[in-house]
Amino acid sequence: MKPILKLQDASKIYRQGGVKTVGIEAVNLEIYPHDFVAITGRSGCGKSTLLNILGCMDELTSGSYFFDGEDITRLKSRAGAALRNEKIGYVFQAFNLVNEISALENVCMPLGYAGVSKRERDAVAHELLARVGMAEKANKRPVNLSGGEQQRVAIARALALEPEIVVLDEATSALDVSVQKTVIELITKLQREKNITFGFICHDIALVQQVSHQIAVMYLGNLVETLPGAELSSKAMHPYTKALMGAVFDIHMDFSKPIESIESEAPSPLDLPKGCPFQGRCEQCMDICKKEKPQMTEVEPGHQVACHLYGGKK
Image (cartoon, rainbow, N blue to C red; front, side):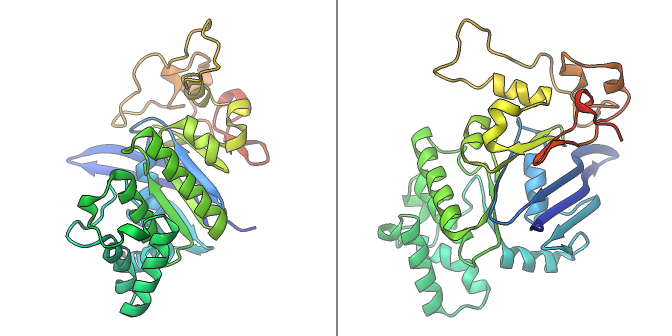
């Protein structure tokens, strides 16, 4: 099976006033049809930059981006917008609904831009709102809906043009825990029913391991490990991934053992160290870690890690 999305040595560097900031650096990632892929890591690790690249909301500084096998790296802004509108659904952290119009009209918006007739777009919007449990509130404005309800409307809008992939940027972080569960159950249900590919940005590693087919872990703009979600607890290998898992609270955890934490502060993305970006916070740091950046190495099918403990040489 061919990947629907593929990034090859993808980097995004921001420059302002002579200052260089790394968004993502030399990322290699493949997302396959019908998968639910989560991109996780602490705040500032490059998750949103990566998602903006995948969603054609931003352009690479270097490297390549392939969509359905076609190289779209250098698409002009208008062509990129057309691709995004036709094939990519986007769910924003802040919902990004228009408060002056109804939920139904919000879902109709992308259909209107695509030239769909009013009768057809109303029918499609009603069907989608019913699918996400919002049929009875179709005529309410977003300002009169709860956060969870607004997110459901945003998901319905993202599905309006039957995209090949839906990307979700921290789609549950602004919601109460009970509402988060409802929204995640809705997303996974839609994924199963419609075979949609989902790319999901989420800093909650305990949540993503429950719902994701594949998990990509990022640190300071670098992809450090990818593995099946079901194997995150048992087979995580990178010291950073292990530290993230060690800090997850579990009611069944052994409270006689200290909760793991990552010592020291992360380096600034304005001044990344030579070699492994995690070297200054890794208890297993070796001399080679300070000299050479580890490359992604496949340790078993579907599981890659960028760490000198497991190879990682060029």
